Image (cartoon, rainbow over all chains, first blue to last red; front, side):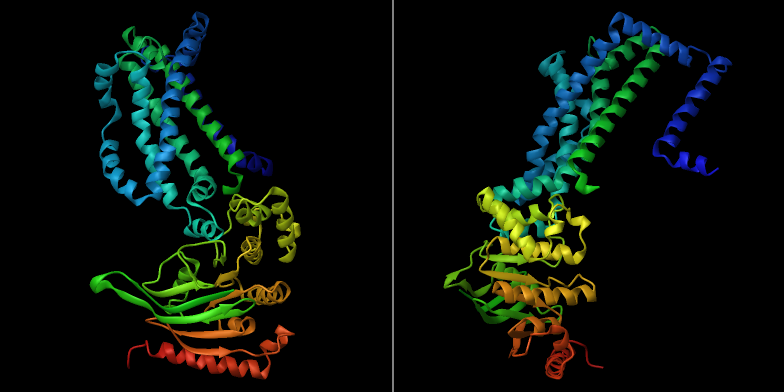
Length: 255
Length: 258
């Protein structure tokens, strides 16, 4: 009994159990033919679809295409958002100048920019990367700005009374102080980047996980749709864990 | 060195909302002196400290060091805040080294001075620990070491022990007195704790609230060879009671008539 309790208290056990239960229900429901396999393919069918896509080299190509777009667009957004967010958090002038503008654009749904981006840049990689850039930039920036505003005043003032210059305060006080919140903001907004890449690929693409799903729909291949969804979920999970790992390594002081 | 605060006024807000916080504050601190300002909340004592540190500007009057007016924060005035001033991502030693790094001292000097000042505050063993692994009293000692390592001409102590438990506060007061004797530092202390001011300072200014102004100045001449004994000695208790009555009288003016 005590052993069981100990087992349950391990952080991963219950989470894994949840996944397994859903998998079990799915297996039972499909093997008893409770649902039309066209609507709900069996786990075995999804696995088979996966094998066949791997064999054709499709899965790998789709993966590379989608991950590349997400990383490209998001890296661009992260690199721009960091100095912009710090500037908005520290300078009243820049803050007053940009915050209303950002508040406005932030509420424009990023997918609504797709038609415009296609008109401007065609159907290549650029509009997809830019879509992810636009869709995550404002959230990244505003979350970083907020983090800067919560830097304790004493930390900044201590640096000033120790003879620190403004540039030193920015680089050696504010930047390390907000690092945990920045990593967390990136982790959260990465999910939005994944949403957007799939949307972009549904509209216009020759390869990518979203493209594969929309093709599968045309041929009623629900097994391939399930496969795509599961793969997207797994990649998201891996990226999330990656950010958590970076956080634990780089910001041990904040835990 | 002489720190002079000369006829300083400070008000916040404008127009109808304008509120006078400090009214004609004047005092000075010379090299080697330990001066304290005592007042209740609303006496503007923290505002005085911020003005001296250069973090705020006076509305009128002049604050100067050796005749040259204070125009902003600088390393000649080291500040120790009440709490939350250690960099949580740096170890105790890195915190102590921080000011010297900002000033661009060479590495060897930084290393030597860091271990010297950690030794001075009795924390050589805690050099590699993060602030969250240190007790409140230890954290304040690191903050003091950091301020001293930057070689200020005057140390500004803004309720440095205000957030600590009573027992730790007492031992920190003894530590501070000992440090002052050993290093010959110059300090300006701000506190609401009369006992603390009388134990540490050679000169104590009593502040009245709303607006903050100095109403009484006492030169404290006590035998400080044994602080524990001093705390309960007759002369000390009489002086404390006398000044406590003065402070109570000032607070009394605030309360509405029955």
